[in-house]
Amino acid sequence: MISSKNEDKYLFNPFEIAFCGFSGSGKTTLICQLLKKFSDSINIGYVKHDAHKFEMDYEGKDTNKAYLNGASGVFINDKEHNAYIAKGNIDFLQQKTIMLEYDWVFIEGYKNSTAKKILFINSEEINNYNNIEEDFKNIIAFIGEDESKPTNLNTNKPYFNRNEIEKIADFIKNTMEDEGKKIPLYGLVLSGGYSTRMSKDKSTLNYHGKPQYQITADLLSNFCEKTFISSREDQKDKFENYEVVSDVFKNFGPMGGILSAMSLYPKLAKKSAWLVLACDLPYLKKEDLEIIVKNRNVFRNSTVYINDGMPEPLCAIYEPKIKTRMLGFLAQGYSCPRKVLINSAVEKITLENTIALTNVNHSEEYTQALNYFNPKGE
Image (cartoon, rainbow, N blue to C red; front, side, top):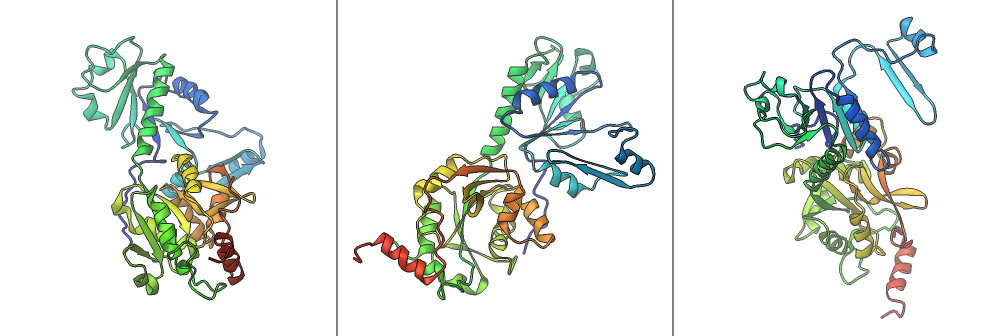
């Protein structure tokens, strides 16, 4: 049974920090300085909580005219930008979906939320609280105008002067990286197909002295805390000595296998990533997996090889936050994981070993592979 418990405690993105404090304390100025510093290497989303009515459109623009004349929502886009303005509040799911595309999210405001917070304070304001860390939950650091921590700020949390941009940036970078290190990597061998083109089960074919599903699982075990075999319910008994994930998203191909693992095994960790391999990649070597693991970007939806100009979905690392996008695509009738990857923020890796991701789907390809690994027929 798929658990309905909400395992995610973030507001918009697993890698988020809220900058909170009184108006005029310099939050926006600091955020902009940090955005400028990180923008070359990290995609950062920004969320502003405004207690007042705000406007983002220009008077006289077509979108503004349509909005003023009764459109409940207006959307405009070009090749590089898009904007959406609507009446009322955007629903919770849309908020999370939009902001999950970014590596990090900086939030301005939301002081009463559960998000990790950097709190802007001054010596006079501190006196208004008996225990500032109880009044504002999950504070990770303080920022103020004083050169050193105010004497009336009783805390062990880091304190920065708001002009110490480099120190603040390093603190945030380390905080985000520490969060990423908490996400374990598990392995998943996709073996639930019907092998109709091969006319026999591809996972049991022998290229290297034992069934291919065992070879694939052994490869994954070099890099993953635990490895599972993804299969249909009617075939799980043949995978001896391996823990099996039976499909609960049935008849959706590889996407169903990946989502089944993500949904059935949050008990392994609240957030876990999956290194996914198809069972029909006999040319793949340990060195090829080592490259993708070494280049893993935990802040993106996935880390993928680019194969013939396209992301390869059957040798990829799927981070926890891509689950929301995959479910969204599935709800719209798209069950191809490559389509999800094409339309998501992913870390792309150039494939050097061009033969590594060659699938063996037909009997002729099977014979070719056998000849490749054993050219003398021994």
